[in-house]
Amino acid sequence: MKKILIILIAIMVCYTGYSQNRRPTPERKFIYMTSLGYATGLGQIVLENKTVQNKNFDVSINQLLGYQFNPYFQLGLGAGFDIWKHTAFIPIYLNLTVNFTDTKIEPMFYTNLGYSFKWYVSSVPEPMDRVVHGTKTGPMGEAGIGMRINLNEKLSIVIAACYKVQLSDIRYTILQPNEQDHSAYSTNAVKDALYHFAGIRLGFQY
Image (cartoon, rainbow, N blue to C red):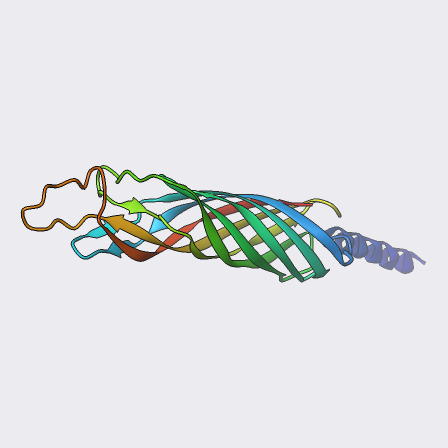
């Protein structure tokens, strides 16, 4: 009898630990996520007459509407604001999220692919480099890896490291012989540029 009681207690302890570790069993459902992100520019942009460092930062606010097909896979549509130092974009994208486990704290991966429209852009070149970054719309992409913390059946927190790319262009000045230098006020040349960023994202899924 004593042995049976010990076995029953051990089973109950194991079951309790297992239940606490597993997240509540989800069903197919619509999900919403509001997220904030911050990323810093990476790399250089090679122009005809100089090389410019990507010193832009990217502050983003996104809203996602998705559908959870099972505990491991969800697909959705998102939109938001990407705010750079002197310009901003409105991205609209398709989101794919993969959860690697079905626990309260689960590793996850996501990717966003879409297109960014212009919100505003400054026409005045930056004082140091005398260029204007990100002056046209273009495709965008973002990928991240991190963890989802499931607080309960209705609320989760997502923390992820992310990598972003934005195809746009850069405006700059090429001085011709005997031409007066107006590069502090205007530009006369343009080149396509792929901007790279790395940062973090914090999301609240409900």
